[in-house]
Image 1 (cartoon, one colour):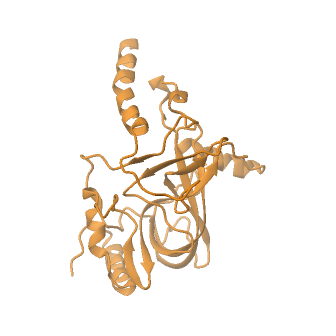
Image 2 (cartoon, one colour):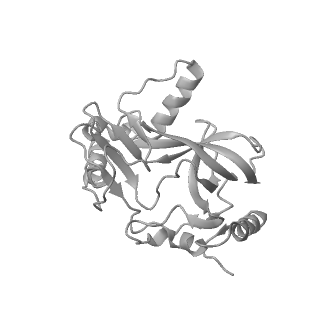
Length: 263
């Protein structure tokens, strides 16, 4: 048993090193001390005083821990974000499966809404960063029968990645390049999945509605390069809002996940 546990550690360590210790995949010019397009957090935030809110925050922080299985017996402090940490960007691994552009069947909730605020948080073990966004709902395309939403509701959605400001003022960023963050003040079609445990809506994907045209949030890595596993998202770029919502509604009615746009 001990030998098997040691082997797990040996096999796991290179994977963790690849994910967290590789330098940036791309050098980009970002405003300092932080990128305004990326939510940020203080290194030592105060937990809510309200017991229920505090419990929810602790659960959300724990969900983004690096090591979720204690039997791996690896000290997460070895990968804790600190003054020696560097900004790192990632991409999907080469064996990842293509993802549907319209994940109607996979989404518990599909809404149109505007981002009113954004904030980043550290995971419980301080190895990861995640961001939360408050969304004001103005249209509901698919609802959750067990926890229905209504027009005018405000919900919290979440996505891995963000920036943290260290005590020295240094900012460390973590981001999956093909999965950027929604922008405050912008309107999107959001594909979401409700989490009862953490009382929020992890983001599957989204499409910005910009001047009544559709712009995919996900898929582009940098300099126009598209992540292969998310390329189907780009086929909907430039459609009118009405056209795109019609395609989403058809996918909802068929309870299907749709990949490429078919005219």
